[in-house]
Image 1 (cartoon, rainbow, N blue to C red):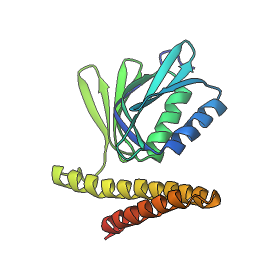
Image 2 (spheres, rainbow, N blue to C red; image 1 turned 180 degrees about the vertical axis):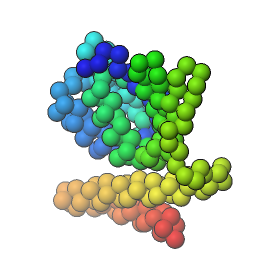
Image 3 (cartoon, helix red, strand yellow; image 1 turned 30 degrees about the vertical axis):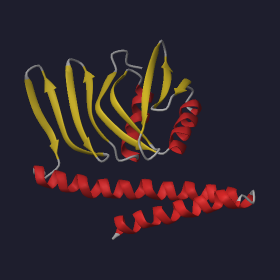
Length: 199
């Protein structure tokens, strides 16, 4: 591995369901990483050992009970950086990715998992290598963000409905009428939200 390898992830924002975090842990263990994790009411912190370094990935719990990974991270492990970039794409996340190599830096702006701008920085010089054409205006960016945000909310709502259906199934299996009724009420409420979002 290149010893000078370094990638910095700034303004990272990825959204997850708790099940996805459990799958991420399994993936990292399969890749041979040593992991530790801790949790309180607000954060789930996953510490990944890379050589002598410990990278702490922070997942903040949202009001809906899902998680979002935010913050700035410096990764000096090529395999972990590759894994994180796949994650940005898979979750359609946002980030500014800075890669450092041989006195040069490239900066990628990623929006909804897609590179929209790539700039090479060498000393005081900047060269735009790629820019998604045409460059979106502020209004278009806001519109795109709102439409994608709606899509994202719909996806999270579907996950909540799946969880509630699992709880209902478990309550029916245990003949717990009270719990089953609570689940049905929650499903009715969630279905109403779904209709509003899809309508």
